[in-house]
Amino acid sequence: MKKITLMALACAMFMVPAVANAQEVTYVEDPAQGYTFNRFQDNWFVQGLGGAGIMMSRSDNEADFADRIGWKGALMIGKWFSPVAGVRFGGEFNQMKGLTAPDNYPAKLGVRADRALYDGKFLEQQFNDVGGAADFMLNMTNWILGYKPGRFYNATLYAGASAHWVWERENQGRGDWKYAGDQKGDNKHSRHFGMRAGLMNSFRLTNHIDALLDLRFEEIQEHIDGWGHRTWNEYVSAQLGIAYKFNNTEWTAPVVPVCPEYKYTNAEGDALVARLSQADRKIADLENQLRNCAKPQPAPQPGPAPVADSDAPLATIYYPINVSKIVGVQNDVVDAVAEVMKSENKTYTLTGWADNYTGNDKINTRLRKDRVAGVKAALTKKGIDENRLSTQIIDSNRPEVDFGPKSAPLSRAVTIVRNK
Image 1 (cartoon, rainbow, N blue to C red):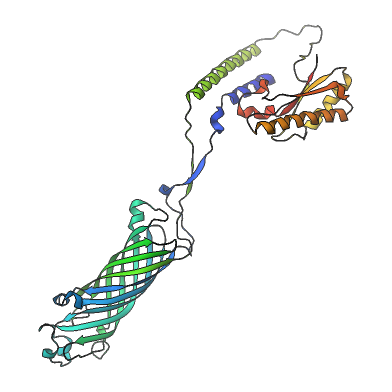
Image 2 (image 1 turned 30 degrees about the vertical axis):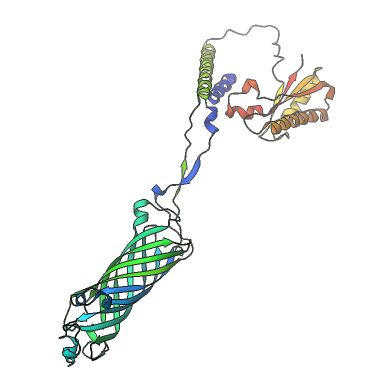
């Protein structure tokens, strides 16, 4: 039964296609799985911005466009939490120019309107304020097109809120009257709040530096047209700037395995069909042997002892891959073979083998020679006349045990055969 079991195992190994190990699984980043979070200290940035803005309130629209342009600037710090979402916060300066009705500040302070009229109807004024702002940012390019390291252009939408304090206010007419915003009776108008939304256009210059174009629309709490007004001003602006990005600036996707798709050639397909047909024949033979084993066997008849098959190896010494030294239990096999040889008056042929599924011809030839030489030396050392031992190597797998790549360990051996 041991012989039947060994043959069944050999058939199972034979049925595994040799091409199974021809290609290896590769590992690639898969953006469809999302992106991994970076360290907290990564993906921070600082932005310096400068440009101009224009007031759009009902009185301001009466002035010429050029008369409403004022300077503005900002210094912002922010962080991206993913390729799509981030925040920023920082400080700002605004210079806002426009017009107000003559019955507001001048009327309250007794200023003669006929000396402070712009185009005969409005009072020209200017506000300088400072404050802070915070925005939530959404990178639309990465969201719609997918994240791509090193992309030159990114469009980011943002929305947020601001709080500013007026530190200088001027009303200018022909009388050149100036008025500080924190005078008595006007404290409640020395600060204002705003809501904002904009488009940040980023242009990659290096891995850590971007050029910026910030286009923004704001709704600012009314503070220009005088006491008692609680309406809102529209304010649009454009700013240019530079952003510096700290530490790691890129993102990585999870790594997933990709199994290669093997396509057989016509020749490989024919060879595989032939191997399967051979396997079918061997399986049918095994089934026939199993049926014969199940039949009642006749009692053994007395007679001469069976003669050993002279072609069958006296012993086989096995080796690990790429090893030519006798190791482990194989030393006991050599000891036992030496004792048998001492009791017989025969000569023996030692054959060195190595499998052709691994290594190359040069390595396998060396292994075959070193293995058979090592066994001969071990037997000679145990008292066997070296004239009784002949050696050879065969540059192929052992044919009686070659069932494909998985049977390769059975060809890493030295076989010892009695000579006829």
